[in-house]
Amino acid sequence: MSGKLIAATLAILSLGGLCVTTVLLLDPEPASAPTVDASPAIPASPADSRTAQAITLNRSLRQTPATELADPGPLPTSLQGTRHDVQLHQDNNGQLRIEDGLLRLFDFYLAGLEEEGIDPVLTRIHRDLAAQLQGQALEQARDLLQRYVDYRIALQDLPPGDSTLEASALRQRLDGLNALRQQHFSAEENQVFFARENAENDYMVQRLALSQQAGLSNEQRQQAITELDAQLPDELREERANASRAGELYSTTAAMQAQGASAEEIRRVREQELGSEAADRLAELDQQHAAWQQRLTDYAAERNRLRAAGLSPGELNSAISELQASRFDELERMRVQALDAEL
Image 1 (cartoon, rainbow, N blue to C red):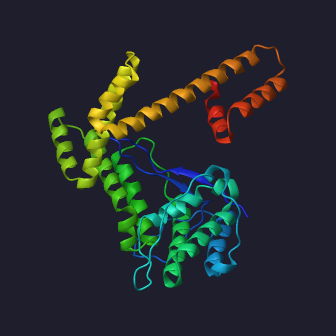
Image 2: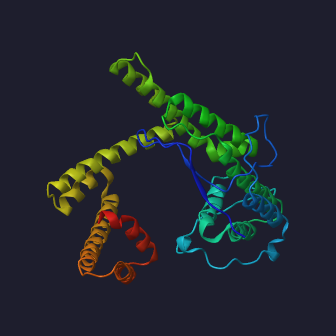
Image 3: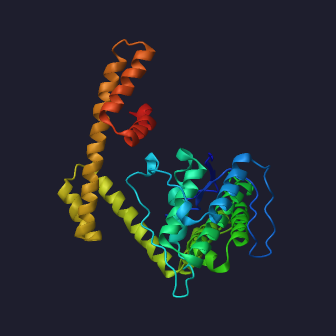
């Protein structure tokens, strides 16, 4: 069985470090999960056999005893060496605790959908749930997974985004997204899973509207933005302030590097702003980045030598493939191939 991963971008607009989320979807078909409220149904796309397969498989796995779930084998290549580190919990009454880690666990395995198909992906999730939960909590987690898959499929039915990024169009799209979430998740689930994202999105749309509002002077616009910032939850306001400081620090250190500052000089500036531990981590990242850039430079020089060697197109492609295989692992080769034209 296989499933195709479709990337559907709702809208992406960075404003002070905040953006509307990019959502990964399964092939589209109208979801059949029970409606939590009376929000109008999203118009359905034509039925797709792969989507129907995903829905049917998920319902079948939900009814399969945990001991009968087949082992799908090693994780797909892109996930090997990684883990989700999500620990699920149930309360003293055996009820599932609704925590944001649930969706992180689902999304961890769904990230491998394009590589291995829907059957092993959903089997992995059901096995993980069964390994951490039991009884009613397990059934509740399986029910949530079923609704989450239905939700991801139904996302494809949202109207296409407006490329002009008008605030009113973006607000309409976010309203549609929220209505869809209310159809698939309870009030508690919506609060736990999406409240933070909703606050970020609401802020972003309001700020975009201010930037597009005619008739405001620069002073009036800045005053309105300041008042909007003050309405953010404390946690988000602090994160925005930290992001702003981090951006300023990045600009400062980038300018220092361009002017030939030493690694120790840059470290001292970072230490004053972030502390010694963070400064050490950034210095280590600088070293890793420099080493990677040197590997790319060495590869590009050897590749250019091959290009100048008078080889036939077939011989050249084969030689470059061998060169990449000798210098990079599988994931690195994907990066190199994407960057090759720029090297």
